Length: 61
Ligand code: FES
Image (tube, rainbow, N blue to C red):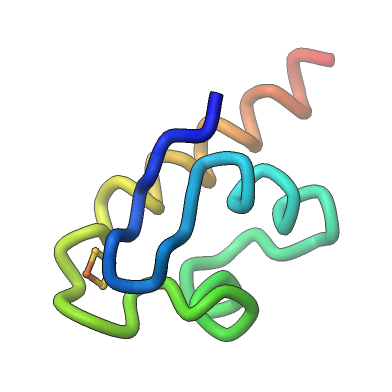
């Protein structure tokens, strides 16, 4: 599943999951690594939700 979350930066959910696994757990960090939220900014809530979902996946084991 490779859902596009940030169209401006071309950032997918798979990328968010990957970077979360690398310890990138904030929107700011994600933006630096991937270029997400570097355009219109409209993806911010979706990226935050994806980070929260990644965190849930981790803690659920
Ligand atoms: S969709 Fe992410 S900055 Fe526009």
